[in-house]
Image 1 (tube, rainbow, N blue to C red):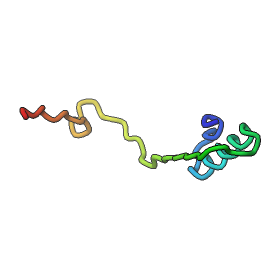
Image 2 (cartoon, rainbow, N blue to C red):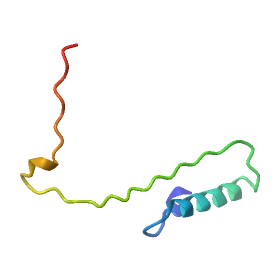
Image 3 (cartoon, helix red, strand yellow):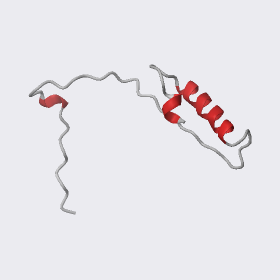
Length: 67
């Protein structure tokens, strides 16, 4: 269901929910016997390729505490 709902680019969260809901109703014969929850997240951040040797983009691990 989800793979089919996310076809195309870009896809709005509302379109994914509408498609999954329609397919779920089709799968269950039009009746939902239980509650359903669906969460769609969208990442609008653009990808920035890391530059070789650029330490500003690297994440460092915090030192373990002695507690």
